[in-house]
Length: 258
Image (cartoon, rainbow, N blue to C red; front, side):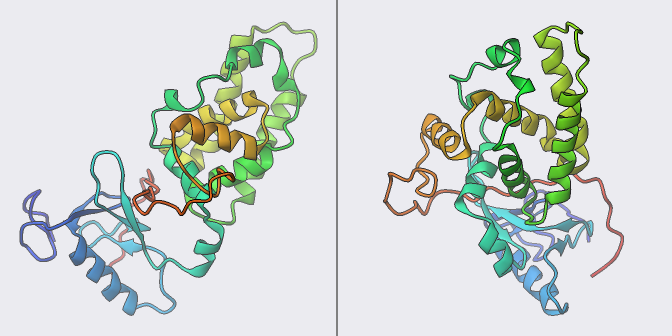
């Protein structure tokens, strides 16, 4: 199948109604058409697969993106199971959505320069494991990320322990070195999200806050209302809050047919 025009659905061959995209290849379809295609493919597999091969390019996507208005998305997860629902909390969704906000709009009152000049990077952060675990789970939408987390934190710990004694290196160079080694550790897993992840990690450790306090400061700065994060808010979640999809940057080509 080839897409003959940007406004023509390759499934029904009619003008596209309710534009939707697969999250890996971004091929465009009518929402109902690709949803029915997903159901048809799912019915042919037992057990059900947590991905859908694009009917055009055969690349695997884990969700269908729709109702994109330039600022927010809706997302239909392919064969979402109860395990994914149980671990993927509002806190995970909030952290995933943060990656769609400009990086300079995170927490403006945290002095990162002071963090490096005061050599606070030498002090272990007791909340870092939990924070990185949740971050990687949110970005990959997978529960079991322990190997990735141990790898990233192992690199950080090794860098901290092996700092040459008596060697005077400027705070700017230490900051640059830290961000480089974390990026190298995370890039095989996060691909296009790597640089933003490194920046978010730096902001978290520089804040010296625990996860609960950090979340409250973060969402309050952005003006968001997330009851699970803001414990003092008891109102129901707003239905319009979008579930932002994971955009994969894998270059893997899928050759198999359905």
